[in-house]
Image (cartoon, rainbow, N blue to C red; front, side):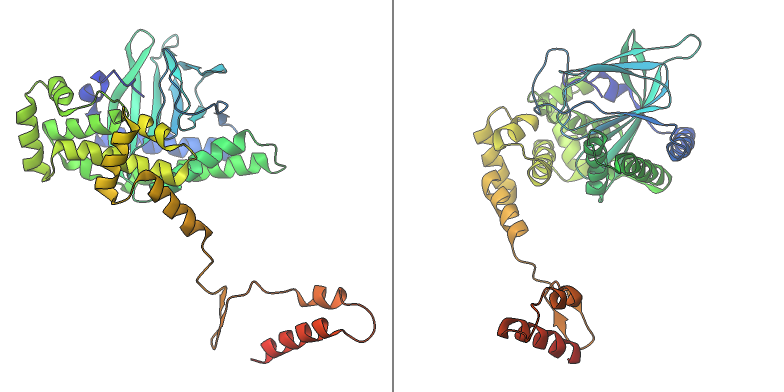
Length: 359
């Protein structure tokens, strides 16, 4: 939600209170009912070439969702703009640059609920108007999400289906929307986060890294300056509380993001490097290999080879045998056979079907 260079909100933000959690649950319950009754309007910008830099705009490595509660949000994109009003939800696809200007209404301040995706982590936060027309984070929670790929698949599928022309488009959009909001509702009810167990400067440092990992200027020194302490003190505190060096943590979060991009997007290696906060793709490749033992190109090639490999598991498991074939409709095979005495190929085919049935 915040721009790459704006870190004030993440430091001023508080964790969700019990009251905040209850409010989020009620909001998601109400939103599900609106979606079920076709009363929830969805807005999705057209996708453009990803991870481009536009003045006054920023982008995120993964999709972002905005649920407008009060007031309105004016969104600007490279090719279009629109306003988001109460009971409307905006899905911004990964890598789409955007800018936000917010407005209060007559008697109600601006407020919306924002969902963001990080590495094995989901964030939910309430936003408010921190200064005229500028939103910022009021309260935030980071939830452990080992099934993050499910959230990302639903969000990305929702964005893609929204602009499709399929005959079942409306039904698919509605189903994806209800499923996604339902998962948000569940994680607010039951979710926990290791990040939330940290306290003080370590929690705030981790928040900053997850919010700003795409910022190439992010460093231990810059984090320490924002936290009002020395880099040496922050490094010592971080390793004492987490058993991990802060420099390693920053690299790990960036590499985990790059892995997800390699697995789920068609971005080239340089685009992934820049989107992950690496100013030099060659340096990114070296750090990637240190963490994964493979270069990004080798990792993607390995993924492609795995996806192209023949299925090793049987199609059907019977009590006495394994079947690796996809089956053949027997009626069609007989119907397509020429009239008269069967030729050798058809006879062999029928014999195989009969033998298979007797096994």
